[in-house]
Image 1: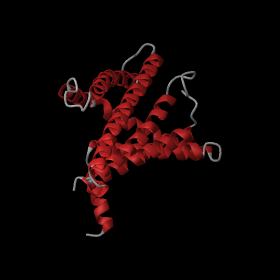
Image 2 (image 1 turned 120 degrees about the horizontal axis):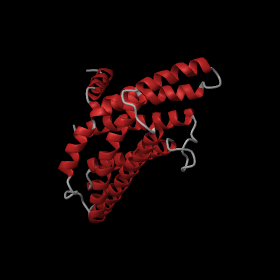
Image 3 (image 1 turned 120 degrees about the vertical axis):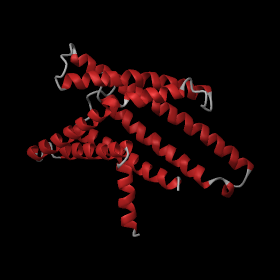
Image 4 (image 1 turned 90 degrees about the horizontal axis):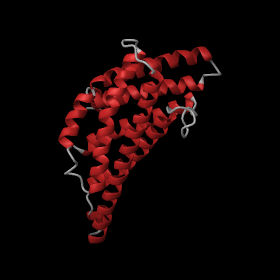
Length: 236
């Protein structure tokens, strides 16, 4: 089997899963937004077409998230109070993140129902703002958990380095640690994007251009897709 055939087969396996397909759709959504932002003044008609494509794909992703709260509830119940976490800080961050996500998904549903005029929602703008706030909190807590986990793993690697030679350290553990660093970069990009959706006057809310949002989202999606490929190869 040629390398191209292997790549295509692996890519098909990835988009066969919900998480993998969402990452690819995210890449398409924000790359279209990136092109729209680039051509905003150069070619407004072309920019409008790509902006429409980006909006439609974003809407499809939002629709697919309508049932995400069901697996989220299951995950939160299984997670409990974080008894299996390596330390108390990770457990507190994990439980707090689960509470925020459990509140975030119903709010997103209300915004979706309002946007599509299925339900007449009063003060729709306030719900949109609340949706942005919970998105920011969710991404921030995820970032803090990832940073904490990276720091704990770094301590383990440092201890292993002291006890044995660097060549004896598990190569797979090192590779996973590097992927964790990539997760920090990806989630940091998501945090910058999430904050930009806040109302003007809050941090950098409303200050990013279409091109900047497209660039941030495309880079984040690209890192996410790369991580999926890398993790699959690590598991082989």
